[in-house]
Length: 194
Image: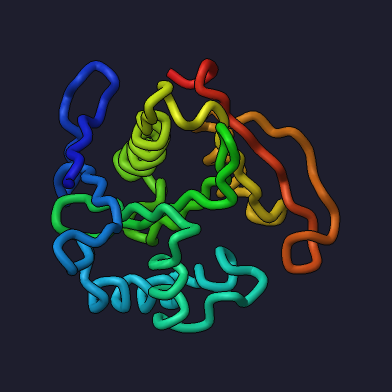
């Protein structure tokens, strides 16, 4: 269930002051979730501290830890948590899943933001770990996802730079979609990642 991710593409472990990036799919196993509710409540508190709740959930659809838990437990979402060492560094999820595509979303907490070269490396590895993980999903007929789509408020310049650094291509902007402002539409195709 735990997916330990090597940091560099050449196989070296990603080490920071906190340790190795690990992905934990948020699923139920034998009646228990892989990440306890109390941990998610703590993540929500950290999101509030970091000023992320209104940036990530711009339509105010998530107003409490209870709302976040309900969203993550919804069968229409495929969530995963990212840890650096033993500390939750963020989470991400897919939804609006189509025949061979899905919409991707992410939240990276302040401790993992790329404020210096080492943190930028950790932030980038978290993003690459997510893309490798999602593109690794396979069904009976091969890979499940050929394309991942990201919709980011255009005013969130850092998030848009980050997704483009991860290899997503900017398609354009849609006005009046993200909290009254424009949203930038980005995508990455399986054949373009790697």
